[in-house]
Image (cartoon, rainbow, N blue to C red):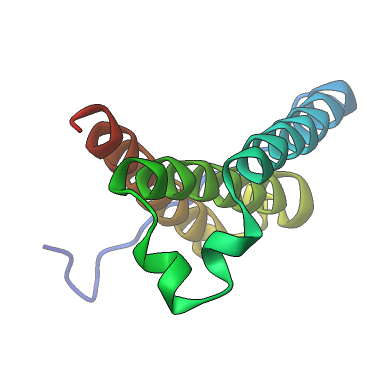
Length: 118
């Protein structure tokens, strides 16, 4: 347990060079684009336009769509935090990145396991 007199040291972490930053930005953009394509192939608009259409969706299809969607959000959030804001801007951004990535990754894996368990 941390007391009020405990000091927490924050290390500044930055990319070693501009090539690494460019590579990660491209990786996130390409990954988010590929997941958007997969997501669009699994969603039919008539399934999501009405309440009756939502009731007709099978659980396997719903889990697969949710898995693609959370994976896409994971790539988007991590890309913004790493390439946009930068995790070396402060401890709060690094903490936000850790929490967001663990949470979204966990939900993505949960939906994959639910889909595979069907």
